[in-house]
Amino acid sequence: MTDPPPPPLGCGHPSEAIVARILAQPRVQKLPSPKLTLFVARGFLPPDLCTRIVALIDAVRRPSTIADGNGDANYRTSETGDLADADPAVREVEQRIAVFTGLDAAHGEPLQGQRYAVGQEFKGHTDYFEPSGADYDRYCSVAGNRTWTVMVYLNKPDAGGATRFKAADKIIQPETGKLVCWNNRRPDGTLNPATLHQGMKVRSGVKYVITKWFREKPWA
Image 1 (cartoon, one colour):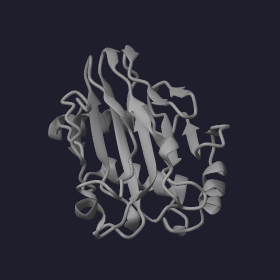
Image 2 (spheres, helix red, strand yellow):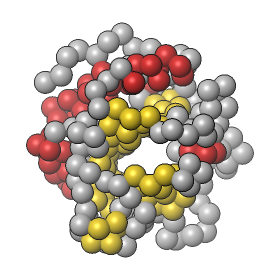
Image 3 (tube, helix red, strand yellow):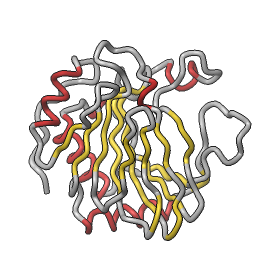
Image 4 (cartoon, helix red, strand yellow):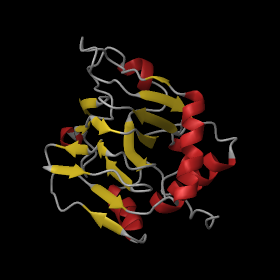
């Protein structure tokens, strides 16, 4: 079990306070790039908790989708599963994320799991929704756009499956329990296209990750 989370900062709070909170956590490294605000923390989740979450993903996974279709049937080929917080393992993960980031859980989307088999990938994309996109109003009219992303690798595939941030020339290799989180906006609050990232193809084995997105306003 983890300690109770501190009072939340809220997703509209200045990013400097959130950065300071994250940097105060153990085993955190900040990407030395002026282009985006990104952190990596190895061993964020213990292996036994990762195994429990993997089983939950396998029970609910379905083909992944994208908000605005671009005509590329192979753009996102993974599987996705929504994880109910009624499960104790999901609640523990949610609490750990709250303690780590200080972000207000009320602004968080439900925890989501993804599974990548051999050859599956998610080509270059940003997590925020483009205001000019056809489905922007559908996805952002209530809770606003996505602000922070928290992603955790649940296992290490035999080969492949890295996450690439092209603008920062950074490739992050999957490891069991490793957290990667980033601000989808610049410090001034504008959307940051340098957060474009790619879930690279798995070449051998299977990759499991979980993702937690936070919004500008409380999630309905």
